[in-house]
Length: 62
Image 1: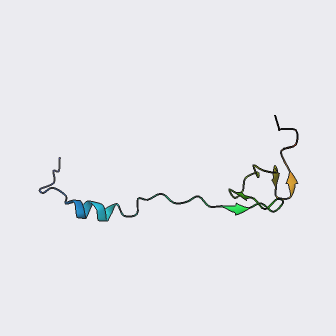
Image 2: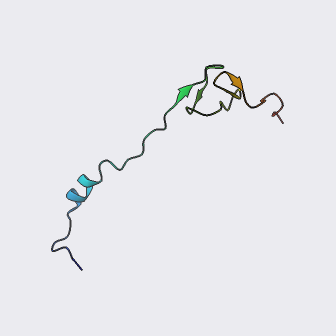
Image 3: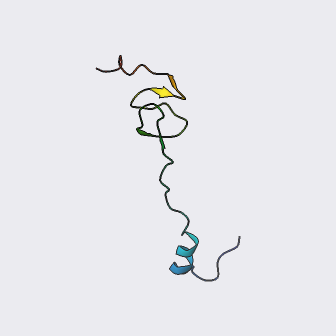
């Protein structure tokens, strides 16, 4: 089994890890109500997707 000859320095290790960061999720605006939502998903505010009401949000209120 191969074993490293020298310890990997923190600078070399951190240079390799520079691209391991979280990205903000993509966001889009709802065509019906204008609120911010994830793309290709039903709007959590109004219940519309692609101009069609998919979820009845009026009846969902508790």
